[in-house]
Amino acid sequence: MSLSTIAGIDFSADAAVVARQLIGVTVLVNGVGGRIVETEAYDRADPASHAFSGETERNASMFGPPGHAYVYRSYGIHWCLNFVCREPGHGAGVLIRALEPVAGLDIMRARRDALDARALCSGPGKLCQALGVTRAHDGMALAGASFTLLPAEAGLLVVEGIRIGISKAIEVPWRFGLAGSRFLSRPMRG
Image 1 (cartoon, rainbow, N blue to C red):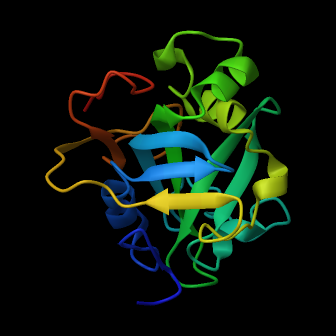
Image 2 (tube, rainbow, N blue to C red):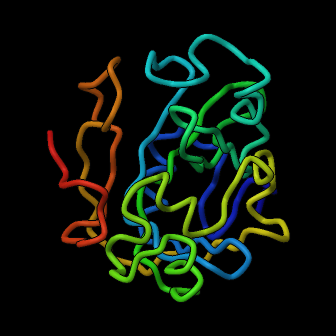
């Protein structure tokens, strides 16, 4: 098993492959988290990707190594958690869009000031707030002290659609979700 393989996922693979395989994987940050039910893939050849224009101080973690976190602030408000893919220097990742909360629900409820389990992690900003993810997690190894990834159960049905909240490459079907999940950020489309 390579250093980039965690929870049965080979993070050196293409982002769209990893994004699909991550559905059903449980991610915990310091023991708090849940089952991944929604992801989006991004690659440096993709005009919607932060890596498209090359490496900067802000997106440096997206360029590797694989199996690490890339955390950025969206619109200056919300933190967003991505898992880095491909070989070092390539620039690819998977945005973790939504979780089904399973561990540390009381902590998540306090952090989010929300009682409904569906409101805790149904979007990338909510998810980071609930899990306590900040820029301090940027560049951390997913197999390190803060993160725990547990394999998905076999036989899950994964659906795909177009990504959300982007203005370029909007037709690319690189959004993946757990079929029938009530914890998605928005219904699947396209």
